[in-house]
Image (cartoon, rainbow over all chains, first blue to last red; front, side, top):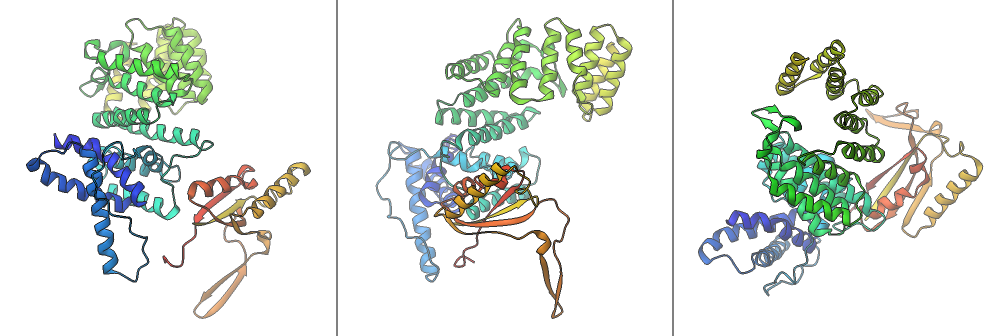
Length: 385
Length: 115
């Protein structure tokens, strides 16, 4: 229970303290102090009426105490003027929500991508360093260094704690969305907690940027995908959409995701995340409108120029009933080193009755497979030709 | 904060431009140099004029310039005063070399009182 409150309040309290102190590390220390105090007092004295405001006030006072102490210890060092002590209890209406500033700081493109990801999960997700380390399969020491390096660069290079100006904003929003989607995709390969974490961050971004269609698009995409996660694996084996047990789908989350997608459309969303969310939504229908899916992929190809998406468009064409056109599209792609290029060719050739070529394509895919589930899957397909 | 904008580009990239574009690029460099946020700026002579100096065992070793045979070389710099990295990036993006195949490296300057 207390842990829940802490997780919910962490990002907001931290953002507020960074805004107050202008220093990431000092803010983090102060917030940790305040949370430790809360962990001692709340179980005894009860949770205050406004936990967020209590935490911000306590953290500010701790920070001021610390600065005072350091100043007396080292009088010769030139320090910033100490802000006035904040004695009065603040309430939510007084505490400005500065989490958007914090997101843009954490996802600043001058930081290395892995640093952006780690910092976003730590600062906004409120995850412990050890948990982030586990999720990314690195040691806690490595993750700690990654976070420290990112924070040092913020400080040394003067990365602003601010929402970027209008001309920088579109690129910076893209950067934030990319970080959240990256976190989601880490969780997609079996580590479910990161998927849920990414959705949490997506919700936060939508709340903070309610008019940004692509933020809605990304959230909808993640929600609809996430709703099918139980059906996607059987043990360790990947289950294709056609073969998924739909009773395992979380229909409420799919509906909720569609509502977010509707909002993205209302906002005039035409971007890549909105298109992908629309595809995910169509694919979660009882009867899938494959021509429509192919059309959405065509738009995505236009937006991204990605041959992998063109491959997906070909699959949709085949599902829509035209495997020959699909094969022509696939054969025009330069994706020889890509496993799914060969497995898709194999499937299309099989449908066209060209079994010998289909087997050759599946064998080529099998050569490229690295994981055991992939190998099992492809071996099964090969046997079925 | 002060930032150094280090301009790396292929030698002769400006001379290779059509006249109108070349003049436009020069005008942009002058405009940047005149920006009140620009503390100092300079264009360097070609890399062939470089001289490397090392001191080893009390002896000064002088050799002919550049170390490596890279395509892009340091061709100039700006020292600017900016509120934060985003403002420095904005100024860096205005340097013609950045859109003409070169790259501008933005580095905060170490303040003496902090060192």
